[in-house]
Length: 357
Image (tube, rainbow, N blue to C red; front, top):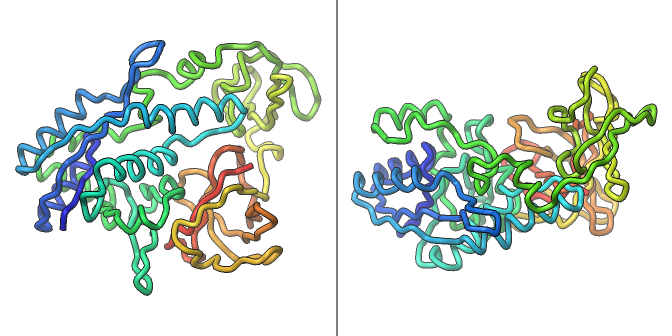
């Protein structure tokens, strides 16, 4: 089998290479460069350190290494999406868009089509049911990354390999240490890759600037302070609001008036909801457990509205072009622009996802 392995320089993708070699495969290693020069300066992941590790893997395992650039595609489809959604007052998820558009999109169109499979270090699995491939969850529920793969399609999933999916993270670290991989002790990456060492708010400020607005108590209407632009804040946010006497949570935004509304307390009722409306619902594979939902019909499901080990039970129904989830328990910080990812009742098959509205 001819395999293209996407390697980032982190421990997970490094161990994926080790496991593929142990299984008798000779994957071609690809490192995707996505950082780029913009009008404000250079934006990049820690590419130099990454490429050092990637080249070491190639030498150590006798594998071909290719460095490929998707700078412009990443900027046009992930960075621009992020900036646009923030400007509209939404909470974007660039990681989901990167997987859909870059790793399993433009890469496949430009290089991956020559290979039978594309392997990554994601914590996920695939499951065959009656000859059809479905995205399914990993053994390690804490590390499971199917939430970030929820916008992929069946063609992408059917050509994917996830060597990490059957291993807990602790075992991955053990394998890396025993194999003396240079990434064995490297910390897991956090935050948005294209920012590199740039703080998220500094990046947003470059493109949207600052505009002073009011911070208002949702319950009383009292003006509590000022902020520098609604685009620096998201629903459910607690840190970085700059008010004393907290905790305070952002519970609503008025984009036209540039106002953010907050509620006080460790568990304010206003930060919760039980209804999650999804637009543009994407079935990863032809409808599985939610097959044939008619208008007004409801089915049981599990779902997530953020990357978390825990599922929430609920029901889902189709209302016009919208899929509506009614949660069995209150959800904190339902943020428009994020994604609701739906699973079957067993929490095994990842059915698909839609953008929260």
